[in-house]
Length: 126
Image (cartoon, rainbow, N blue to C red; front, side, top):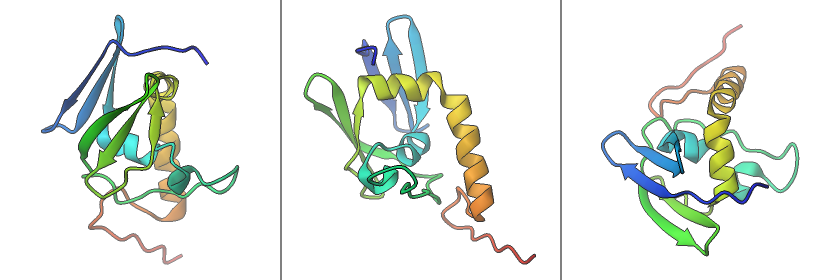
């Protein structure tokens, strides 16, 4: 843990992107990305191998951002999910490892025959 504290958080409702500034470093984290990587037990499970693959979250937005002590924020998403507490260190990790996380997520979706679009169903016939 690096105990980083963001200097600024800025949510853009139209693009559904949360800008997280850590001094000179700035990460642009889409609401969908934050939702599918929520640190909640609903997403992460209660131990290794218990993760629940999130799908159909392409159009999700953030309705509310609340401070949680001096170390984190709680995000409320428009699909009702609000149980994830995003620590400063976790937000930094999501920003600094975004490319790897996103590619892993897309690969897991494909392997499961799932989709980012909530209005699309994928059927594997063979």
